[in-house]
Image 1: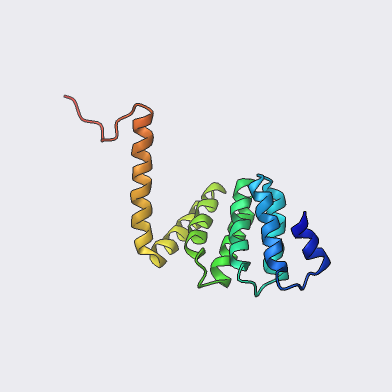
Image 2: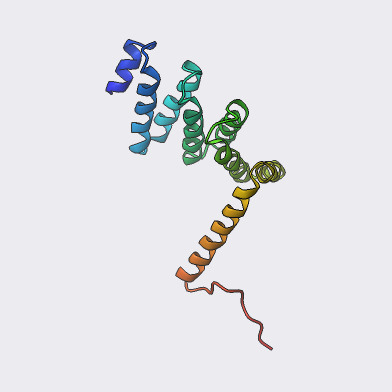
Length: 154
């Protein structure tokens, strides 16, 4: 792959971080999540000052979820939350970490992470709640179920 060749040939090139990110994105697009994950992991380690470092950490978490590596997903999402406080992905990383903790059946930690999310982003929790309710209603309608609560019969 041309992107990886550039990084291997000139790892200190001004666009090496972008080339590494693009190589990872190509693997991700081909649904080769483990390969993408390995390349994304390199970016914050080799290019910690890169503008793409937080994005790469987020992508590591996302790809880890896709390969059922929830522990790794939690670690990377929380690293993003801790190390990149101004990242545009911080909010989603905190939420996704809580979801991954749920997938690991670490419910108390998941509840704490969801509480931290709700405290840090109170407006987002309202929107997510409405979106979740809308998705549930849509699923019930598609499956033939009612979108309204069941009525009582006497």
